[in-house]
Amino acid sequence: MLSLLKIQAQKFPVDTILYNGNIDRYINFVFMGDGYTIEEQDKFEKDAHNIIDYMFNIEPWKQYKNYFNAFAIKVVSKESGATHARSASDCNTSNVPISNPDTYFKCSFDSYNIHRLIVPTNITNIFNVLSTNFPKYDQVILISNSPYYGGSGGQFATLTTDKNSAEVAVHEIGHSFARLADEYWAGDNYAGERANMTMENNPSKVKWANWIDEKGIGIYQHCCTEIAKKWYRPHQICKMRTLNVPFCSVCIETIIERIHTLTNPIVAYSPNIDNVVSKDDLIVFKLTELIKPNPNTLKIIWDFEGDIIGYNVDSVVIDPNNIDTGNYLLSVSVADTTTMVRSETHNQNHFYTVIWNIEKNDLSNTKFTSIENKITYSAFPNPTSDYLHLKIETEKPLKGIEISVLSVNGSLIKKMTKGLNITGSYEDRFDMSGLSSGNYILQIKGKTIRQSITFQKN
Image (cartoon, rainbow, N blue to C red; front, side, top):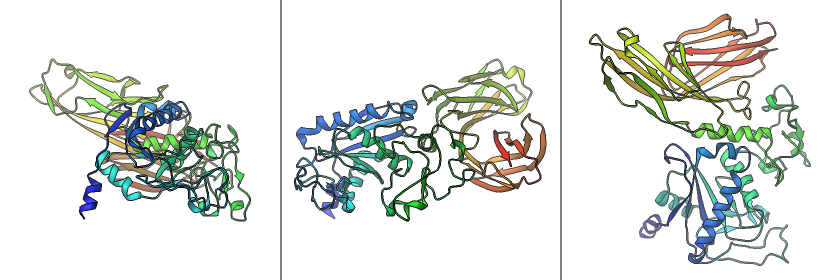
């Protein structure tokens, strides 16, 4: 017990590599080195900087750099290098010496009989260092101080200091951060349904149907085992298949989807506390800190009691003299409209809201309270021939929701629900078999939400 407590109390310097904002609101990448001695800590920090600089010049990471922080925990090993048992059948024994240095996380080549597969074997030390030095991490990136080519994904993205290390890092982070599969055949044991790997080969049903026949996206069969032939990938040339090429559109979309899952671009807003203003004061409602992609693809809509009063602006003004005594709702919603995500047919759509309740009393004083929310919704299959399945997840309760089917020009065709209250999650399926073939809009509307999903009826 004493030795465990000693390990848990181990403190190392933590340096900032990239900082955009509050670690509670931004995505935090944490680098840790293995096989770097006390004298090699400057080298470790330089290696980490090189990866960040390289990564955030690659699509889509460069567009979403503003969403990330990056930190380096300067973990000290007693000896340099990584373990080489030289036991894998594909190991080139003439170039790789046997080694077994005393390193903090014990990164080792030859894992699962693959020489280039380097993984940390002292997982306990990893979690102890993180919990003591930087517990609010979102993704860990381990750099093994070895000049030999290697890497691995999994929970921790791991790479070496080989000349290709930055490219390897981006590939392995694709595994660890975005849960992407290899688009080369890594082996029968690695097969499984992923965003970029499936057993479905029907173009209208495959999970990347919204990209078929564009930018090289298709349905390509793996080879060369009997199991491999049952699986398909979306592209012939993708960074998840080979180094030094771009990510395919499906992988780009998946990375962005993961970013949206982990963040809320509305970092701060005002007013954010209960307040009372006199009847003569104008009230300024503002998004004071907003994480924006570069170029900015965020759509901002301000809604006051069902009327849009601001579009793609960070603030609006309410004049209490122009409203009667009573309660009102003002909401602002933010959604990413990047063309790198096919939002109209993609599995998930995210938007973020702040809702203010504005109360004007008989004394002509105005009081307001605020609440922020993050909402995810999906509608599938799209296109559909019969039923459309709708799923909504919300952090805060939604009240009085109406779900309707509209024509593409906005005319009401039929209401599916009325006065629906949602807490947490909601799922239902709606019969669309009676609709004629064509495009329609599924509208989700309430006082604190107004979103539309375009779907196709076959």
